[in-house]
Image (cartoon, rainbow, N blue to C red; front, side, top):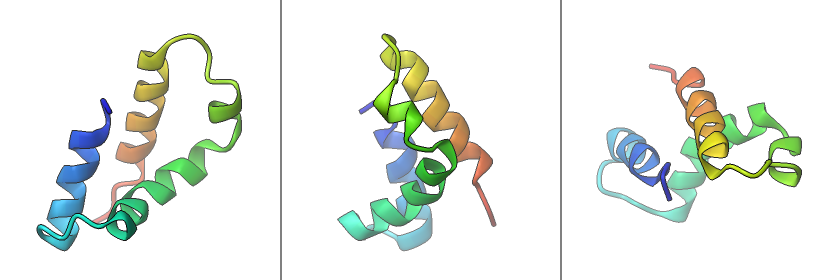
Length: 64
């Protein structure tokens, strides 16, 4: 949920107010693919660490 506002902002920038599941997947998919499965199978004990990894991956996949 901590990542929701950032992803929703990107969906709005790219697709307007069309907040569909497909549009959210389009925004999130590159960031999730970059991280790999290990982040989710062994995320550690801190939700903040997972959030920071996801946010960093999302920001590093930003393209104009």
